[in-house]
Length: 293
Figure 1: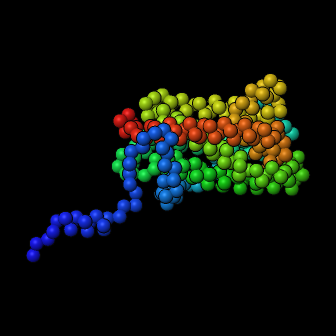
Figure 2: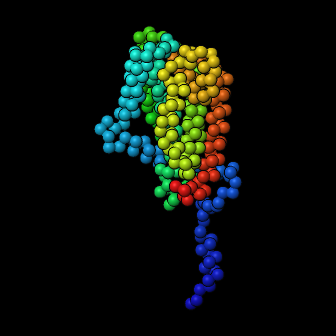
Figure 3: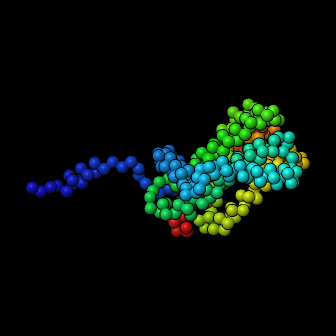
């Protein structure tokens, strides 16, 4: 009994039902961001991988989530408060430095982890298809877990100082903390993917990021309050979109600092612009990055 090839071909075609039709992107704004939501299970997998592997095969393990900000806060207290005598705006120095350090640490971790996306994931990107934005996005979310753990520690310290009657006055701005966090994450992701897109051709940026983030910290009110600066320097400082965010966290939890809605709007606007530019560059680079990595 002979079979009809045309009928078999038709039957096979009807049986094949593709979930995704991979097509080349044609324009800078052809971003297909909806695909990221379809691959949310992969995002969760990457987040779990990044969080579990962060301190794998270390003696203290995930205790480093606490030890890292504690050691840094102690060094800031010793060097900048005891030795340099830098003002903390009337706030308990431990709370002042810990709040700034934890917030800055989240931005720095988002920036550093996403700035090496193409180089670090070249092996995976070259073998398996998935929206490339999944990788930097998972880094931001896994960093958020670490930030949440450290903030719980900060709240325990704050509760202790409140019990001791320290000059700490949490306000209703605490309700805006998720917005501050979103702006900071957007800014870190935006800058990170911009640098990641450029490092595929210019590897010098990888070296620059290493010390550039540290230099940026000194241009952000992490170890000193904006109020300690002259009015001219305050204006220059507030051009840094991270400055209102750090001050906003201190103002919300500790009740001290220079912060208002216009500063929040400025940071949100800059973050949105940086994020859009970063996504466009990221989209352009992923088309042919395998030729340069």
